[in-house]
Structure formats: structure tokens, C-alpha cells
Image 1: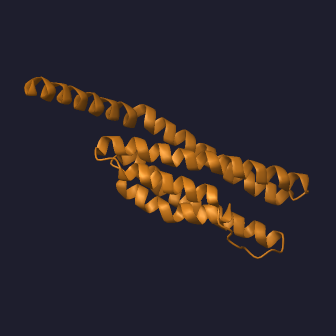
Image 2 (image 1 turned 90 degrees about the vertical axis):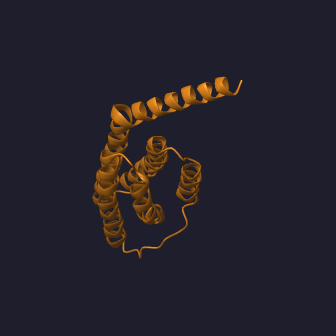
Image 3 (image 1 turned 135 degrees about the horizontal axis):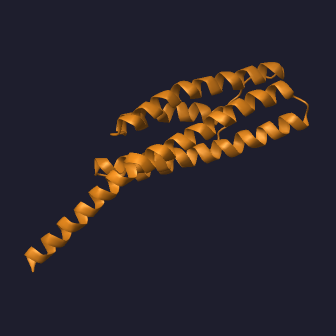
Length: 164
């Protein structure tokens, strides 16, 4: 989780820059600040457990970020870009939700109640971010992308008819 949060912190500014929807840009900006708090909480947990924070490569997040970057690099239509950004971000959120849920469960089993509470707090924030991304997608981003895609299909059909 520690490496994952650091990788996400590195990736979010580029995602925010690529976003065209103002609500999505704002959500990414807020998530950057939230992710910094997640790192701080993990630092606090390490301290509680008398452990030194160490980053071990999180191959899952690394792969999700690379997949998202590859998908985003193929998109040329700005209105469709936001849908790809949300899809990539939600894959990351779902991965984090799973990770934080598991870590919280282990902390509880080991009677590290304070750590479990901090992990629960982060888990709730990750879930809220996922819900916010869904709301942005369903309310504005996806309808705009569908409208743009439909318009492109109609233009392609018209061009095909003209060529015939």
C-alpha cells in the first residue's frame, strides 16, 4: 500500500492535466491531497508498529498505471479522454479498496485497533472517491462522450456515402 500510494501521487498530476471536465479535474486535485494524507496515515501506522517505512514495488498498481497510460495515449478525442481517465482511476480505486480492506482485517486480527481505525478511514475515503468518479461519469462525462462518439459515427457514414 505504501508504494501504491506513492505511485498514485506520481500519476495523479498527469491525469489531472489530461482531464477536460472541470469536475474531474477538481476530483483529481482533491484526491492528490487525500492521497498525501493516506501516506501520512501509513507513516503513522509504521511508527505505531515500530517499523521503518519501506517501499516494496506494488506490481498491481504499477501495472494498472501503465495500462491506464497506454489506453490514454491512444485516445485523440478530448471528450472521450475523460471516460478513459475515470476508468483508469476507478481500477486503481478498486485495487486500493481491496488492499485497505485486507490490511484493516489483519490489523484487527492482530489487535492493532488504532491502525485498523486509520486503515478504515482511508478505506472509506477510497470508496467515496470511487463513488464520486461514478457520479461524474454518469452525470456528465459519459453522456458527452457518447454524444461525441455518435457524431463521429454519423460523420464517418456521411464520408463513406460521399466516397461511393
